Length: 108
Length: 127
Image (cartoon, rainbow over all chains, first blue to last red; front, side, top):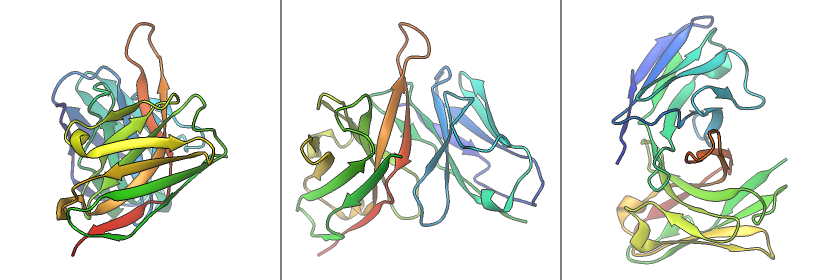
């Protein structure tokens, strides 16, 4: 199985800060990597697919990059509504889709 | 606008079978998308359970495959999850979702992503 790790597991940041979250796969997954945002008590929301394509309606302050085993999600100027948990997900192995453990972003 | 809504019991006894239904509006379950079930145990990450193709073929997480069936009722535009032999480890919020699959590079595997999602339903396995 392809395992996904994320770092950090949590971070504290202020409104206006630039935030970067890293996702790493245990083997190369090309660009088969998606990012989701989940707020407490809510369902996840798709932010980015295929490593860097912004889902329709998602603010442009969110961006994704990477390929192979290392990927990043960047929030260029953190807004109050961005405090949430972020998950990466690989679809390289379609028979065993897996998610990362999550990164919680909270208020500093 | 596509909307999904899960329904089913919130409490199930160990060894019994869980049956959940996802009602879809704004898209046909026989259209160009796959339809998926994903769960999230309390305080932890997400686990893909399986997906249903537009033609009705199920694809399942190998760790759950012996206990899972996903099917559709096209007359009601719904798809369902059946999970047998429940244990406390199956306690989780269960989400249904539309799954997009797209070929980005010809002859390469498709890219898959999930969205939108239903609101989720908490299922507790306890006697």
